[in-house]
Length: 82
Image (cartoon, rainbow, N blue to C red; front, top):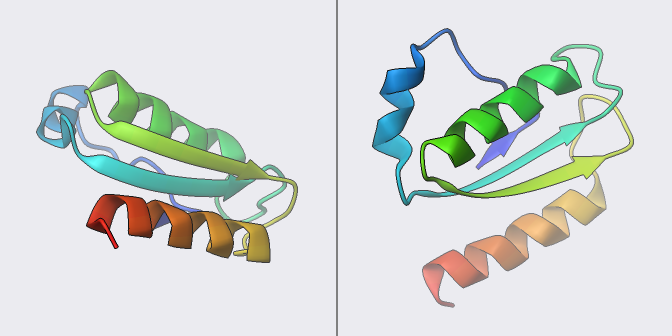
């Protein structure tokens, strides 16, 4: 899970290791600490590498709103089979 995170400066080729990996990512469109476009870029790169990305976009800043907590819980239950 990547919550209000971003892509690091790794070469695109290093994203290949994410192939088929389930990833949950969320990001606020008004995040003053990590711009939304950086988080969106991570999700796009991971998806392009074959990762199974669930990306939750929300109106807000550098935070984890209740809706994201709920979505993350649902995602975890699906990934873990619980």
